[in-house]
Image 1 (cartoon, rainbow, N blue to C red):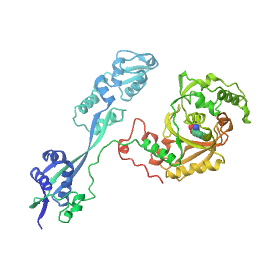
Image 2: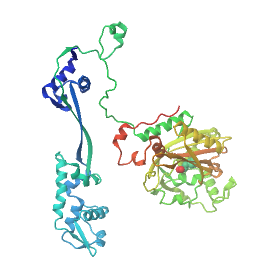
Image 3: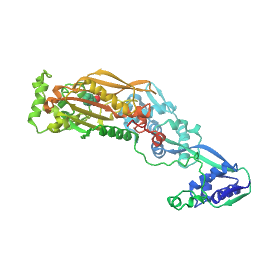
Image 4: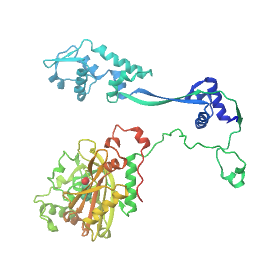
Length: 498
Ligand code: PHE
C-alpha cells in the first residue's frame, strides 16, 4: 500500500532526504516558520514508518562560574599567593599576620593548601619556598579556563581538578539529536488531518465526516521549564491547609523578639543554657516590654517563688533588663505566648491556633540541622484535654500527611509537663529523626494569661518533615546554595489523605 504523508510530515521528510543527515536545530531552522511541536510529531511519524533514524548524543557543556571568572581576571588564589611570596622568605607562622593583595584573610590557608597540593611551594624548616616553575604549572589550567570562556571544547579529563573546585566550572548536559535518512520512498501527500475535536463540530455533527489525526500518546512532548513553587513552600502550604481544615486559626509574629516573649513568658529560667549565645542569636539593641504592669509582676513573681501557681519558682530575682534583650526567635512558641496575651475571654476557655514560620538557632550545619529553619507550631485550649489527646492529635496529623510510622519518647521542656518528642524514620539514612516536640503547658506558663483550662501544644520541624515526604537524604537537597536543579524541576509531593 502506498504511503500517505500529510504536508508537514512530507516537508520534514523532504529536508532529511535532501541533507541525508541533519541535526534537530538545523531542521527547525530550515522548516521555519513551522512550529517545533509539529516538527517533533512528524519526526515520530517518519521514525515509525522506518524512513528515518534518530540519533541522540549526550554531550557536556562547560561554562565558567563566579570563581572561575575571577581566576581568569585576577589570577588563581594560589597564583596570587605565590606571586606575593616568590621573593620573600615568609614562615608559615607569619602567614596570619600578613596581607596579600586580592586574597581575603580567611582564604590564605586555602591558598597555602592548594599551593602545597599542586607542588607550587615547598616548606623547609617552616619557611615557604616558591617553586621557580610555578607560573608555567598554573598556565596550563589558566589556558583551559580561557578555552571554556571562549566556547572552545575541552575534555572532561583536562578539567577534572577544576571541576572539584567550588564555583569554578558549571557542567551541563546537552542532548544533541540528529536524523538520518534510511529509505527513499514514494508517497502520496494528503490534506492535514483535523487536530482537535471542537464543540462546534460536535454540535453540528460535522465530526462524522472529518478525518482526525491519530495521536501517539506515548510520545513525550518537549519538557517545559517553568517556574515552580519551592518544595518547602509546598509542604508549608499543605500544613496550613491541614490546620485550617481542622478549624485552627493562624497566628503570626516577627523574627525579632524580646527575650521576654521568646523565653521569660514561658517560664524558661534566666540562667537556662539555651539562652547562651552558643544557641541563641542576640541583637545588640534591647526592646521594650509589654505595657502591662500586672503581667510583668506576675511573671516576675512566678520566676522568683512560683507566685500563686503552687510552684516554688526558680528562687532568683527576675531581671527586666535581661528580658528586654532582643533575639532572633529560637522557636515560634514566642508567637504562641504573644497570642495568649491577646486571646478573648472566650478563647481563653477554648481555642485552636497555629503558626508557620522561620526560626533561628546557632547550630552547626549537617544533614539534619540548619541555623535557619521553619517550625509549624500549634496549640489547643480545652477543658478535658490530656496527654492522650495530644498523642492522638500528633498521630492523626502525621497520618493525614501520609506518615504512618512514628515513635514517641518522653522529654523535658521548661514550659511543658509532661513533654514528649515524636520521631519518624528516614528510610535512606536508616535513622529515626525528631520531628515534633510537644507537651502540656505548665501552670507557671499559662497562669499569667488567665488561662485556666488545659493547653496542649507542639512545635514541628518543617524541613525534616519535607525530607520525609520527599524521601531526601539531606536538608541540603531542599534548600541552601547547592540545590539539585533537576530535582527542583521534577519533584512531586505525595498526595495527602483528605
Ligand atoms: N518550642 C518547642 C521547640 O522549639 C516546641 C514546643 C512548642 C514544645 C509548644 C511544646 C509546646 O522545639
